[in-house]
Length: 358
Image (cartoon, rainbow, N blue to C red; front, side):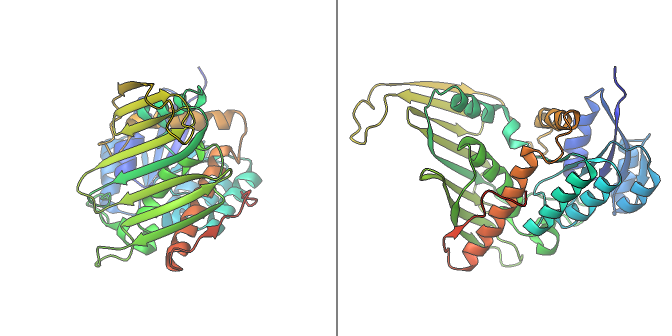
């Protein structure tokens, strides 16, 4: 058996404590040897949960003190993703980073350049594609069962923003200086990278509307966006923190059928191609599945190790600036352009293809 990789965590909040650490505990190929967190109470909890782990009050001290770290796992709010990632890469560690990768394309570009220069892997936590029910969509597309994908619709409903830990600024997602934005910055990455995958390309244009209904915060809580993809194909997304329910609903339309996902429920409809006059659409078959995907568990710890295996694969192949990290860069640009489009009256904006900086 090969030696276990040493992991240093930066940020011991909800996603780290309830998502990453329990997932690492199920593995035999890694060990968490160090944790850095700026909050004294969270450091105490980390020491309690991980008694054999060295605890630090900041990531700079940790990187200076710890030698031989293989992976730095960044699970902080977005405002420090860039500086931590660049420092960790320069120290010789591979980097796993929570979404969104960065608060701007400028910052994201610097992170990718640092990975290339250091010859170390930079990898995003794009975990939604590892949800079991989402894999049903991927299988239906790859198998050709629903034909060529022509459009997708993604709806994410939440009745509030995701809360942080009580010991440190539980509402940080509603503070622009810490989060970089609201629901677009928080959930946008998940939505956008799924569209890239299902339409097998990157968007060429978008129009968006961001709305802030809760006036006591300075970030938006609702986003509507339409993205155009090559070949006049479209993705439509609606994200809300002010809904009356917690739910995801995805639809993927193809030339031979469609897939609808409603949380853990999946329905694949396959019939004759729609010619525009509805000929033949009365003859089709429907397959229904229920696949437990734990959408209600915000830690998504059960999806983590499938994603982490892809990260380790990139390390083994020396795939430093990999497809996943280019995808995360594209997500950051889409989020930027959503805010710009909304600020300019939902004006249609072109996107910078082929994302040369990535």
